[in-house]
Length: 493
Image (tube, rainbow, N blue to C red; front, side, top):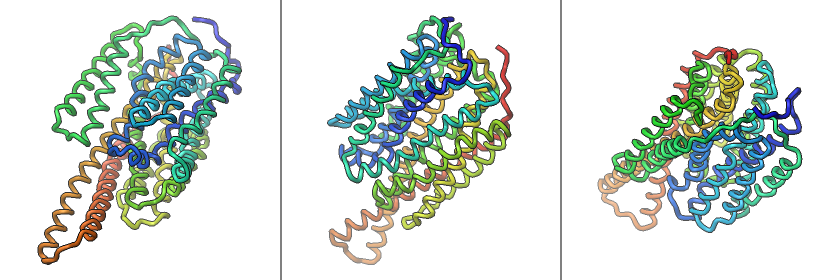
């Protein structure tokens, strides 16, 4: 082991710098949800294409986060973090200057390449700096940073989209990223132990092919259909790639990603619940803006303001939930939180063209409150059961699983929504035609256009409601698993 700074007490100055960088990355990721419809119109692309701005970002993170355990083990904290933040800054500048969707997507993926290491570094420093009995509170503060960004992001994004060009979303991030970078160069220390390990390039290739193939297959199913050879071919390739990746990790003495962390039951169970919940959470973050903007015609700023209370509640509850976890353990929080989340998601299946603002805001806020009781406790509980040496791998496994599950879940639910929209639009058009023929009346051009707009709106609403039904079922599955949770106890090395 190389000698690093011995942490006698929590390095608060360093943690603040890491929190600033993480906040910038989280804020950047949440700014674009409200902007997707505007970017879609600007570049004249479909919804399944524009959602790659979100899913592509998560995909790159999901591919590179497995390597984060290697990077954290091999390179000094200061060098690794400064490099990651520099890459993130370059990607932000590229996205801000993008003249077309291809360059924008490239910039987002470069951003993801840098951001993929920043959060694991912060989590590992937190795990090293606090004893198990205080980790709930510490991770609660981490959750606060995670959720303050969503609290600010949608509203800020809505105001910018309404008053400026969407490129301002990236331009405003640049100075914050530069300031964070300068602080890191000035004050960051090396606190995590390192040793010389080799990166297994075959594992990196297998993870890229595996996770990339799965997401690409699910994402293109909305446009090409599930019967397309490209769709099921890419899903099959991805499944084979992930399987080979896992088998290789289990056979290696020093794997790129230690999959044996799943032999610890509370970590495995917490990871499964996190994956399921990520699918439901990311879907809600995309479906809700689609409803308020495309069905209701609400301005981006008002849409952001409507989502603000839910994000604020999550931010406020995160440190409170962390302290509650230290006292009561994970099960009661997870069960109550998932009951609330499932109930609120069900009420989102009842959206109408004229649903009141109050209904939308209250239900969405309750849903976010339920999730705030679950996310950090189950993650912290799983990490608490592991030996200290497995922390880098455990955080990498957790983040990879959540990112990939969120990406695939979002792509799958958007595909389900698009398919249902197309089916409903066909049914409504046929019913309208039959009604007109029975009445024996002919419509002029304006009436035809109005009818088409009405059918499109109704089909989109039905598609969103149907997809929330699926999300409700996913949340109930997480609820069932939560009954098997118990407090994680540190295993022996």
